[in-house]
Image (cartoon, rainbow, N blue to C red):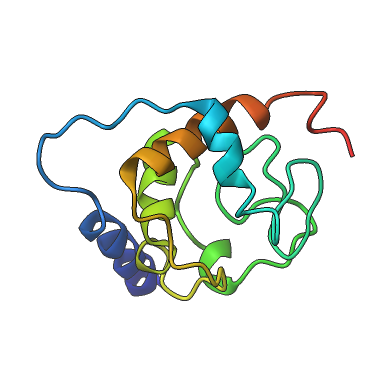
Length: 131
């Protein structure tokens, strides 16, 4: 079990972006448009094929009560924040090998920053997070 956790950690570190380029600043208005791609599987307020996004920031991956995560996501040692979401959204299967999230990722760094900026605001909104 320890070797599997180490393998997951090494994969996550390998997925870290290299270089010293500053991350783009996110535009939450554009991020809401990008989130439209996510609603086939996710919602802010309730679980769908994927888990709900309300309360996402600061939550451990694979920890929404009652949601049926893949074993890989359930044991992932990730706490969601801007940096972990940036890496995961770029390539979910690279960061969490074995995830059942069937999405290749968002290639454009600006689109990822925009989506993360919107999620940061929307995932803590009482109005948006009420089913």
